Image (cartoon, rainbow, N blue to C red; front, side, top):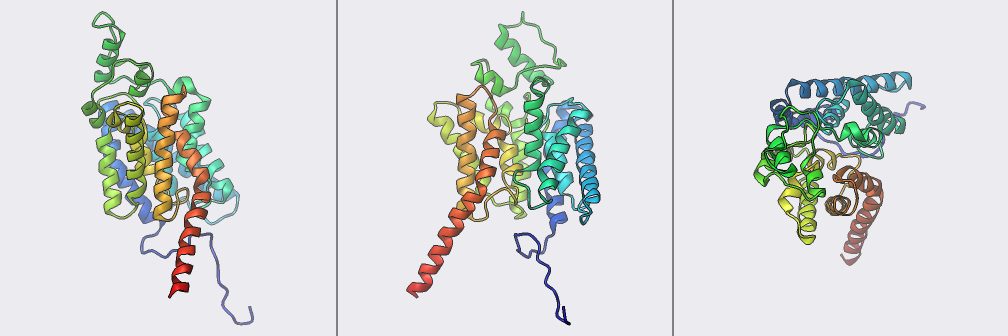
Length: 331
């Protein structure tokens, strides 16, 4: 105005980094490759097809929303693609396309775009997509393709060799479901490697750990949240008399710790806040696993903590500002 330059102010955070959104999201995609490759090895190329379908749906919904709402296009920044990949990894093998599309709609349209787009969503979009599908289609979401090892575990749990089960069966219990019913469990080694039942991207703790270490080494995420989350799960499991390693490797703890809980928008900003957040996720996860009929607990725990993130930031940022002001006064 009147020869003066106007300052365009975008939504927070206003931190300048050499890496933009697209470059960061590409690193996340690279980190997901080990878990995706293992999913293909265990479940076949149907797992890859599920992931591609989910990515196409998420990117398509992002593009359509931005177009309809006449907002700057963000479909090419890879954030929707990452959401699609993580959403697919939280689903059982063989999940139909129409169901994946519903999850993608809940993740991108409802959770992300209706709140203003990237950086303004109240919860992790992929997390919401998985949660909506689980509570809407519980029967299908708890139907898992049985791996050869899980087939043997189920035979043992059912009473021995006379209980015949096919390794290509289309329904079976996950380790957490077996745990909740006090039945035979796979070994921790099998849990860590991924020779078990479960969602396509959750079964191998090793593959997820490789991806998580890569993200930490590239400084894409802080290790505070993953480490505090897993440590809290292990401590609470030991406190209640259960195997800590089992509960870290079972279900979605590893996937959530490295790829969902570390979401920039829905996690606290400061290290102290990240620590509180990670511990809260771990404690709530174990509470839901032990005291409710829902054997997993990860999604519900993370949704609670996503909603508490603004309050955690208010507390920790306020404490830091107070210490800074006191330091200046003393000087």
